[in-house]
Image (cartoon, rainbow, N blue to C red):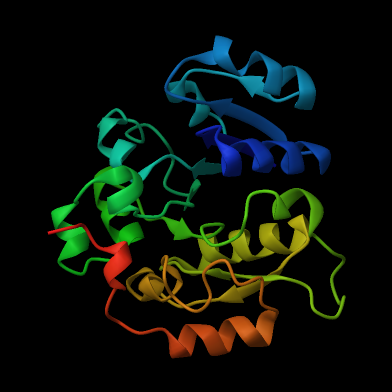
Length: 221
């Protein structure tokens, strides 16, 4: 597949490595420009590009940048991108450590719904609750007992099916976590977040998630 990745931090960098190792064509961009991605491009064979180029002629776009930086993306970034291009959001809201207060999220909007509104595109939420290093060293063949499972939330059945298949190919059990409005169940501070659970464990943790965001994942007042 042809995949564009916006963001080359821990998750974005390791997704670049894994996806390239599986033979996918990958373009990767960040806010500082292609020259700063030369080492990653040399290591993986990915193409380092500007942000606008990362969404062109691809089948999947993965947005994996800090929540606070979402509004800094070009407002027309997806204006010419076909509607069948799948957009993945891996982000988390960390108001105390990084992002500052985002009023809509503080008022209860799920993080990825907020991202979707800013991008002007439907998104599928995944990869937000796994440690970045585990993308490289904890993947396993399908059917392996105890295989780590990842929740996948989204509204478009076709887009979600594409992402579920990609998660499986990467070496993790995909679990349908419902619509994007339900994606609060996999936000930071929930039982599934960072827990490395198997598929049954993920399903159980999603059901047990409390609706109220934990205090340490709210902005300080």
